[in-house]
Image 1 (cartoon, helix red, strand yellow):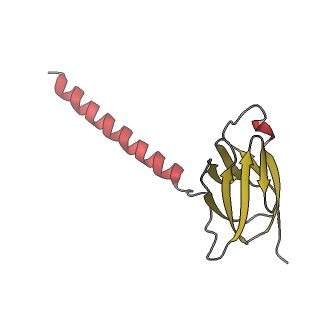
Image 2 (tube, rainbow, N blue to C red):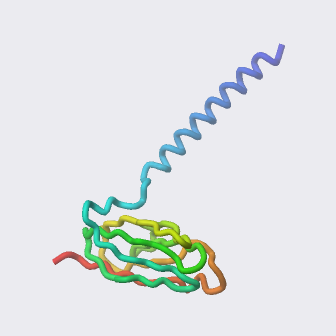
Image 3 (cartoon, rainbow, N blue to C red):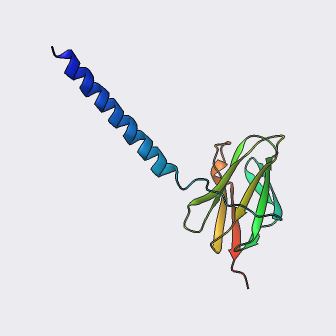
Amino acid sequence: QITKPAYRFRRIWMLGLCTLGIAVTVATLSPFPLTANAGANPRVIKALGGQWYWKIDDTNAVVGEAIQFHVSTADVNHGFAIYNPENRIIAQTQAMPGYTNKLNVTFTDSGTHRIMCLEYCGLAHHAMIVDFEVTKAN
């Protein structure tokens, strides 16, 4: 009878695939969350998105300074993402009409960071870029 060995093989194969899937999930999710805790009294910077611009209250910070971005939008949904000087996302949130998201960030690298839109919002979506300068503490 061939069905018993086939079912046993299928059961072992399924158990192995599930174990592999769990291991890969745990290994790839370990660096999350991407945002850092901003501490007890962060400096607030307001960020307003619109088609096709970002209006940021202040575009300067110091390494180690706790910042809390208050992100909103004047029109449609936008994705608010902060990229480090190596063009890697270090924090992101959604900008939604009628709502303010709070994004806590403590910058660890000095240099020119970029704020870009992650959600397609129209023809000039690619132009939604603002440079954000992070300097070393004195």
